[in-house]
Image (cartoon, rainbow, N blue to C red; front, side, top):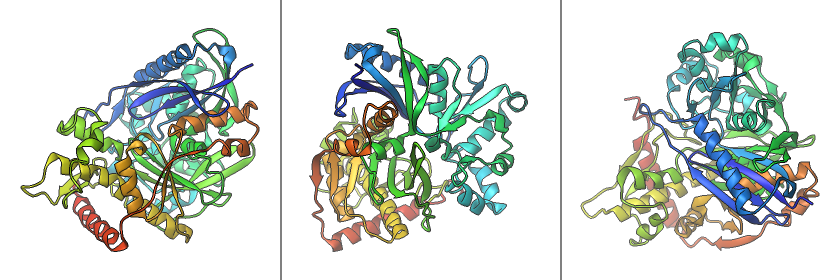
Length: 496
């Protein structure tokens, strides 16, 4: 009998494959980083073929590590970096341009033009998203407008579009499936979250042929079959964008439950049940997941740079040799000594939404050291999360009682304690922090009966560590006020 679920987790900086057993425990994991390309300031690209080859390699590697054959795997689930945009030839499968990553800002001026035309409210009402270059629509339009012959080929039906999930599924199924799920479709800025369909008016605004778009499916159903390298086929049965998958993996099934993922970016998602809550604080109204006929909505706050600021300390400044060293360095000082780092390398996300903000360090003195900068970098992640949660609390009209956390940086105890101090509520880390992959596994497993239902899944969630707030309210208010002052100095920098 199949006793494993294979989750493919295609992230912004690496591809991973994880095998889970029926108890939600990790049995094997494999990971490979891939190259980030920055051809111009503000531009971020990936090689689509490298995305595919690294994902295929770790899939095979994880199966080998677990000594698992296709008969051992009940289903495959996919989770992915969202909004990243790919266009490829329908027949040959060859990409026409590198993948334009969600962090890319090249289309900021196009977005400004749409705002000047008074179109932002239309997009908010239809898609739940603010007008921003972060989402897929303007990236796709850029490819059609700037790659020679792309628009003509697209209008002739020869080119197709997809986010990373769609690209991987196309390759895994050898071109037989051109699909996505509702959680990825709703991040394109082209999908009506009320009617659950691509929106012809929004497509016309960007000049995108409808025939390019994938079929939209639920997050948990059998979509097709994948032939494994070892032989045999396994059903592909779960799809969710990374943040929705992590929320599902954290078992945030009740309205009001939420999690924050500390990855390359930071993403706070709160379950709002069957209700679409329009945000008054520039958060995103998004689809959490669809299982069967049941659709769950969510509020989300997206932070562009979180763990990526630690990578910058390593690769850009060279003050640490590995990301793991940042906590050790930051702990050599009691605090940042008044240094504030605003990592607006790709602009500011929720709730500020300033695509022209840029990174800033303020408060430096002759006594400032690389340790203070490292501490300020970690602090900046927690400050950004606190800003999002404050906005979310205002939208819901209810305070947060606790924050469930996951992602690589959630293993940093110093950061988690500072997060609890800023929020004034407990921060809770589960035993399994790979909740993004786990969520994809759960969605796939539900589709094939590997798990009986969400109640069974919820019983598997277990706490590993709890961080209680220890900062008094006056100190908390003071550091958050200083953070806000630093934030203002980063705003609109590129515009000038």
